[in-house]
Length: 337
Image (tube, rainbow, N blue to C red; front, side, top):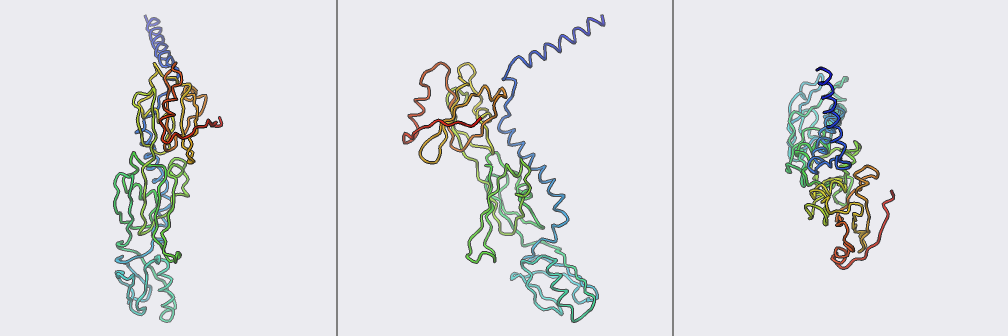
């Protein structure tokens, strides 16, 4: 009886394994676009935790003081200076023995050095500490494809990843690039703003933390929505779809609810790509080989037109080609693999 039971269990396991493998390439599930975006947001949280550890110790030292901040000052052997003082709207404070001091834009360590220098004529041993007790001046805007776009107050040295997390993370429509628009500062006498482009995929997915730059008061962080692409032919939901970060062909067809296996010719999928010069490159793809792992997946570009032809129909692409605006010319290109 025991032997029959064991044989029955083994037979069941064999049937399950055969069923799992029998579907060929269909067993390779394509992650839905919502899952891909969730994975990116998970990487965002992971990146925040990794960067927070290294940033914690130096945060207060590099913070720049601004109007309405409340400073706490302690000077060894100089009781007249031991007090709390609020920075006025002009970025100044007034202290006994020192007078009026402009502190706007200075770090606490720079203020300490300045006060110690001023105290040379009063005491020989000079030890001064300056800490920010209340932060009022630092405001950064986060706009675009984030979950909670608004103004945020920052209370210490803050980095790009911190701001994206404060804004609730990237929305499902976020593109792969964000822009930091920085107001003109003293080093730019022409008064022009500085725009810094950050590749979010490189930062969040590849872990290039050199791109996790600090942000400052007055910065505007803009996360534009991703571009769009068009899918038609033998797919279950043809139409226009918005890119979600780095979108691949497999993800694009998944967004179109997948190909219609019963009629699709997956060995002759075409991608019509605008080259910016009035022409479209034609990229021919064997989608079966991509699904089967014989060839790498292809990254989709903005304004791509993806056509999955119907099997056995001649000149399937002619109707699509003639419908492109302006009758732009076509040319075949190789993807190099």
